[in-house]
Image (tube, rainbow, N blue to C red; front, side, top):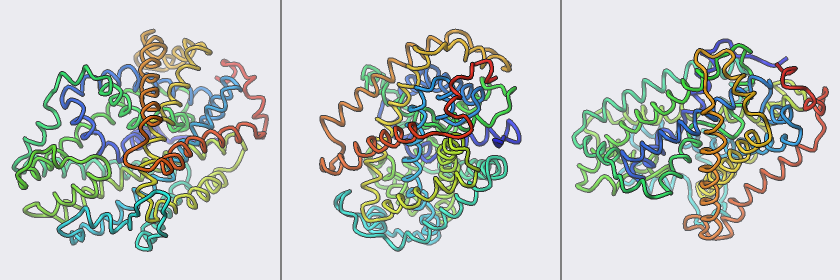
Length: 500
């Protein structure tokens, strides 16, 4: 018997916890600032309306209707579509493996915050802390200083996962999300009270309308939506499969998206307020110090923390504590998407499915606590997001709008909803979302093929970039061809109404 959420609130907190992750805190502000500032909000909100919310409604409806994780859901729609479900699961598996590394670094930095152990040069400290090598293929051995936090994070995640949906994931999100909000609130209030905060906010929100003429800005907006909403890689399909039949999925999708994107904007205010203060202290432009991604979190922000006039330790603990809680809630959702795939097809108990997923995840994640860890993570993250998730999203929308009666899913979504979605939803998915996602996938893939990635050698990119995509494809094929149990192979014969 499949587990079920204790309440709609529990489901929403878990869905929001999945969507609100590390990228909301460090990625969105930088993406907005470097793609037109305030003008970026126009394609950003357009992407939310035309892709983010429609696909959330789509996946919530699919999961609730077909009562399974990604593979079984797609198989119940059409047996030939099962491969896509396994591909999405494998994308989630890859993300789960490297996501651990970032959470491990964050946990270490909570400890460093008490004494500002990073000293006067946080950038050099971070690279030394990781034992960073000069190549993704030069592993450099396991960094023993990372072993303790590595084991702690694994133990915490395993404890939550073995508890199941209602007693584990739902309870963890009910605890973590309020803590996350309080910590971010402290960061925002402190940031806004610092001199130079206005300069940072101007850098983030000042509109550059000419940027809207650049197709890459629109591609960046759609990329951010997929990155932050956890759509198209099995998570929301799995989570919604544990919903009661009469759940209002339309309202749930709007609540999830609003909470996630509101959090992104709110966190961005705090982050760039601090960046403005830091720029003022150093006498430089905000653009000179507003690094992206990992650099912002582990190099730039520790410098800002050390330069604060008071309560440095508290501020550091709040910042990295927020990252940690956001990382944990996202991590458990990613892994649950994988667990549900094995649980449903092979009729495993929940605990056995968790073991089947966690053991190889643990082994592979050791790669990311070697000296090459950050190099590998950077390459894998770029390819799995820009090629893996993007291609899964394109295929998902094309299959459902071209080879399935999407109107049936719209009617199912509206059946128990407080307000109905009109046929604009069908056309948005069929035309706008399909075209823009297709363009995004084409441009990203073309860029990787012709230009490689970053400053990495072609061998590094081929092994950990294209190799990761190949890994997902091969294992998706393998699991698709395996026989399931308890009539799984015949599930595609069940009609839509019979599933209901």
